[in-house]
Length: 417
Image (cartoon, rainbow, N blue to C red; front, side, top):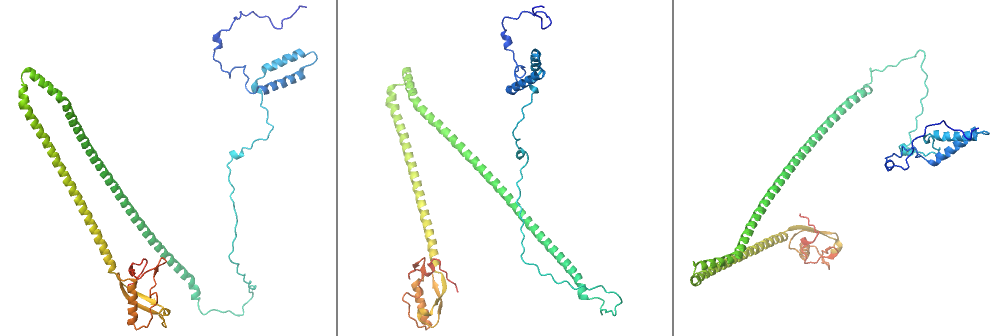
C-alpha cells in the first residue's frame, strides 16, 4: 500500500507566480457592490442561518464513520448557498396601523333633532252617526224649485276669474318693476362709465401737465447749467489773464526796450500817467455803477416792503369791516319772545303769559326785565317784582347776569312770531 494517494486527478504544473504584486493591479477601479467577497445585508443573520443549516445537515446525514463526508457536505453547502436566498426574520410585534395616514379622516357631523309645537291641536269632532244605504222604494221624492243654486255654483268660477286677474295684475306689476330696475341699473352704468371716462381724461390731463412741467423744468435747468458754464469760462479767462498778463507784459516791455523801439522816459512821463488816469476812471465808473445798482435795489426793496405793508393794512381793514358788519347784523337782529310767569311768582290767581315782547340784538337781560314790567303795567296787572327778577337764567351751572345780551346766550332759542 502506497504512503499516500492523490485526492484529485493529476494536472499540469502552472507557471511560476510573481514574487510581488504589480502596483498597477492594485489601482484598478472596482465596484464594491459587484465584489463577491463583500457580504450584502446583515452578516449576523447570515452567520446564524449558515450555522443552523450546517447543524441540520450534520445531524441528518452524519452516521458512524461518516464524519469526513459530513464535513465535505457542509463545505459544499457553504459554496452553493447565496446570501440572496435568506429571508428576513419575521417581526413578532404588532403591525403598525397606517389607515389614519392612507384614508381621509372625515370629522363626524353633529346632528340634533328639535321639535317645537306652538299650540295644541283642536279636538277632533265627533264622527257622524252611521246612516245605512237606503234600500227599497222611497215613499216620496223632494225636488228644488230651481235648476241649481247660483250662489254656491258660481263661487268656483268667481275664484278662478279673480285669481287669474290678480295673477295677471301681479305679473304686470313685476314686469314694470323689473323694467324700472333695468332702467335704473342702465342709468347707473352709464353714469359710472361717464365718470370713469372723465377720470381717465383728468388723469391724462394731469399727466400731460406734469410732463410739460417736467420739460419746462428741464429746459430751465439746462439754461441755468449753460449760464453757469459761461460764467465759469469767463471767470477762468479773467483769472488766467490776471495770472498771465503781468508776466507777458513785463516780458514784452523788456523785449521792446532791448530792441530800442520803446523809450523808458516816454513811457514813464506820458503813457503811465495816462494809463493810471484811465484805470482810475474805469474803477470809479464801476464803483458809481455799483452804487447806482445798490440804490435801485434799495428803492425796489423799499417799494416792495411798502406795498406789502399797504396790502396788510388793506387786508386788516377788510377783515375789520367784515367783523363790524357781522356785529352790526347781530345787533340788528329782531325777535319776539313769550314768557310764562307762574301765579305764585306774582301772587296772582292764575298763570300769566307775558308777550309777545319784541327784542333786538342790543337788548340785555336787564332790558328784557324792564319790558316785562312795562307790559304788565300796560295790562293793568298788579304785581310785586320778585327779588331776583322775573328772569333767572343760567348756563352751564352759572347765573347769567343782567348785562348779558339775550341773543348772545349760547344755546338760546327765540321763536319768531
